[in-house]
Length: 272
Picture (cartoon, rainbow, N blue to C red):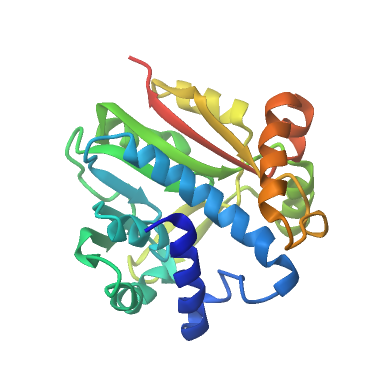
C-alpha cells in the first residue's frame, strides 16, 4: 500500500473513530486539508523510504503514540515493536482491529513503558524510529546512551522532528510554556514521576552537538526539511506543486531553511 492510499483509508478511519480527531485534525478544517495531508505524507514517505533501504531491519518505534506509522509498516509486511506512554495505548486494540482488513497487524507489537526501566539487550535493533518524541526524552543524554546500547553497529536512528530554529514555532511555544522546557509528571500506570521534555525542540545544529556526546553523528546526506508555506499560502488546489517548490527552496536558501521551515527529518548513526 502506498502512503497516498494509506492516507485515504486513514481519513475513512477518522470518520468512524472520533477519539482520534483531537490529535489528527484532518476533518476539522476543509481549507487546511491538503496542508495537513502534505505534512503527514511527506514524513511517512521519508520513514518508508529509509526502512526499505535496509534488509529486514529489527525496528523499534520509540514513542509510537497511536501506532499510525507501525500500522502502515505492518500493512506493507514490515514488523516493528512500539513503546509509548500516556493515553495513546488505549486506542491501539481498536485501531488494530480496523486495520486488520488491510494487513497482518500481528507484525506490530507494543508495550507501555519508560525506556529507562527496560533492560535492553545490546545491539537488539537495527533501526529506531523516533517521531515527535526526541524533544520529550529526558534526561536526553541518558536516553541517547540507551539508543547507543540498543542499536546495532551499522544501525540508524530515524528522526522526525520540528525545527527548533523556526521563529514562528518558537514564538508560539514561548507563549504556551515560557522557558520551562523540562517538566515532571506523574504516570498513573507506572506509579512514578517521570521527566518530560516540554516541547523542548532544537535546531539541527544543536541536535548534532547532543548526539556527538554519545558517539553519534548525523548523516548529512539524509537531512530533509519540510513545510515552509503557511496554511493561507497552501491552497487545496495544486498542493503537489507547493511541496515541490518547498523542496527546491530549502536546498538553495539557507536562511529560510534554518528559520522558516517547520520540520526536519534525518538519520543518525554511530560515529565509529
